[in-house]
Image 1 (cartoon, rainbow, N blue to C red):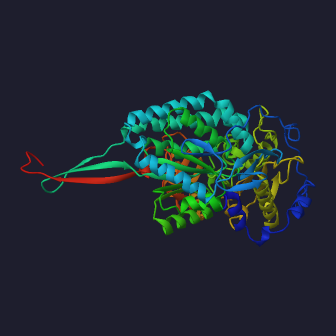
Image 2: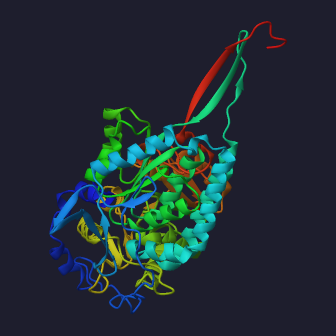
Image 3: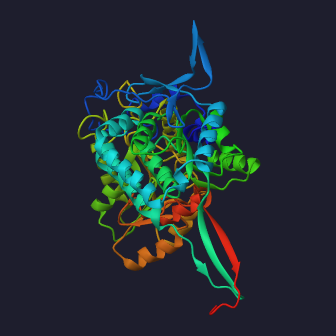
Length: 550
């Protein structure tokens, strides 16, 4: 399996196959052919080419199997002794190597699954009282809070997102998710069901068994919590594969979970590549359930592998091309700010990013000018520097793909009003980019770019809007900005998406279910709905003799 960015890149048509060098030579001049205007400068951090050195030391780089950090089974022979195979993880600010991490493959997945199977079939975790499992998760949440600085630093260093985002937004969300599911652990129960004859009928919710989990690179720790929290609360054991771009924070978090009292074998973490470790996990005959977050294309591969092996159930949280709708009654200044956040948050590397901004024709021109001004003010720079709003893209593959999409927007006739080029000469920084006069048949309006590129489209009325907004293979989320209750109600019911945010965006409380329609996935993460992903329902029917009542 390939990671999200690589699979998306393969979908780009021949229009985008032109060399990056050709794209860069046009864009870096600051003038767009056919537009006849110079793109103004940006508010940037001076530290783009002089990055801050993180103070945290990387200690966890091996695979975690059966409660121990171990080398990979595959060996690299360096005289006189073989050592476990490793791969580098890179700093997206510079492209330099942060650390070498053990590279898991099919044999390591076998080892991890064997440990998880034994821990489920013979170990104490599913046999503990639910209250005891909850106490382990509560202790883990406390340790997450205690180690916020280390976790946030690893997350920013490996991923490129602003440190303030990691520390002040994401880490509190992560510990909140763990506490949420700790609270659910002793509230999972069955029902007593009336029958039409002399029988006592009850249902029992049992843990599904060994859960395979594959998490993405854009929110490594948050996806770790979304996956691990409910599975552990239900009594399952886990083999988790982290993204090869961002392996560091999951390993450190798993170490803390064992410090909290998790028994060996209950959580196993494999760093490795999709085509080897991910494929082995998806097709493993001893894995009882699979959960995947990533691209829609890779989701198809995962689903097929699960079906061809043992028909294990699969939950998928996949890609999106979410509409953000600005109605004619909107306060334009507030709408611009929210639309900006909806798209540019996390460098635009968000599956539910509001990447199709639909603006009513009566306020369109005003919106364009103010969206341009907001993009030009966005602070891009070293994510460890205070006040930075946008760091680098994850890696060179994603960086090049985004620039190719920008090139396609220009060549398709969209108007580039801001951005469109690299920032600095080091790392993977891209200037916040805004396109006006975008049409549905353009690739920038169809494909998930997964980068800081805002495409702004014009609409006249709600009927037209609904048709156009739903005319996509995705259905993950949508945003609606309006003061009119009837408009909000109409769009809430008409939009075929899993989440609709009204006058807000990216609200991710632990209790709110998240997932998509169509090719944005199946099943839900978070909330009470997620527990069913990790449970089997068993019916128990007992014949009654001379019941006093029925």
